[in-house]
Length: 64
Image (cartoon, rainbow, N blue to C red; front, side, top):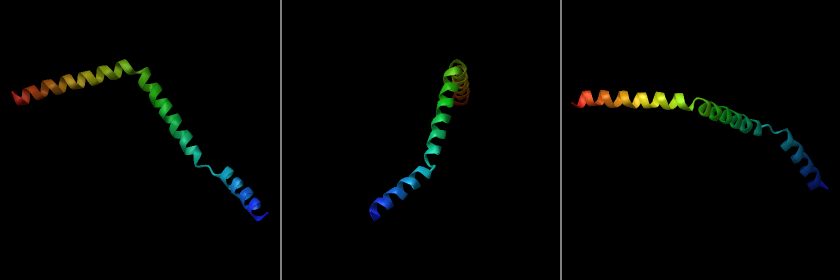
């Protein structure tokens, strides 16, 4: 009976454990970030392309 009582207390302690809440929060944050990236995909692509164009032209001026 002692093992059964310990098993019951272990189950109760496991149910009180809230470490899984952090995992849920991380998943929700990732979902929001992915949604934002998909929503602003075109604008992000334009900004990155402009940055690379600027980088290429500036490096061409430096190199000569």
